[in-house]
Amino acid sequence: MDVDFHCHLDLYSNPTEVAAEADSIGCYVLSVTTTPAAWEGNQSRFARFDRIKVALGLHPELIGSRGKDLKLFLELLPCAEYVGEVGIDGSSRFKSSIERQKYAFERVLSECANLGGRIMSIHSRGAEDEVLQMLEKNCGASVPVLHWFTGTIKQAKKAIQLGCWFSLGYPMLRSARGRRLLKVLPFDRVITETDGPFVAVKGKSMVPAEVFQVRNLLAEEWNLSEDEVEMRIRENFRRLMRSKPRMVRVEGN
Ligand code: MN
Image 1 (cartoon, rainbow, N blue to C red):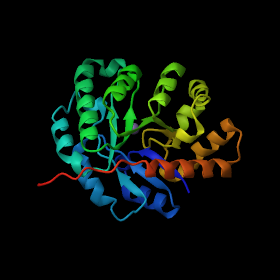
Image 2 (tube, helix red, strand yellow):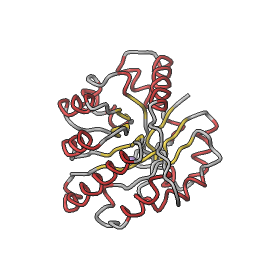
Image 3 (spheres, rainbow, N blue to C red):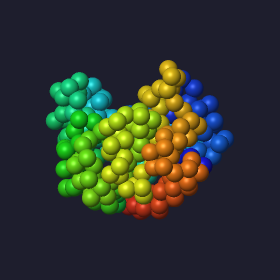
């Protein structure tokens, strides 16, 4: 059994085939969205696959160009069990929208907390300190999963202290920096991801059915057999699902 806890199923050229393939091998997928406008369509598109969950997202890279998405996000949030991709991107390309990104992420966090908390897949590239500070202040009962974390060891330790999980993918585990980080991450807060179709291996977008490749890199780094890592990730995934906050039901509409 495999887990791909951060994948953009709707951005492949053949989403239904990719989903069906993952399902056929028993792979669990958290399909994140980049805009809340995609969420409902994706929910119905993948509804027949029990192991595929669709997260409500508001990608920080799009906040500059799609500012009105925040309103839609907040309208849909009461019905969404999972949230992602959300967060802040502090890299130079998106610096100009950083204040709007921070405002949006703050609203996302506080509304999630008001609604009882959510499991969240979070982007933090170049803005690790900002993301961690906001989580510290505003996380409530939510469970943050830091996706493709590229911060420092010190920031990773802070994140661990705050209760964060880490979803690790192929490029991270192939980089020296990622492997150094892995050494400080607790075994029981780690989960696997592809971040497909954005991550490509040998020129081909990685699909959830190939997430075993990430697991195999973990096996090398942890010095465990592939079966042991599979078991460990499965246990982590089950524990993560058990930690899912109970949704607060909103009366009326
Ligand atoms: Mn992503």
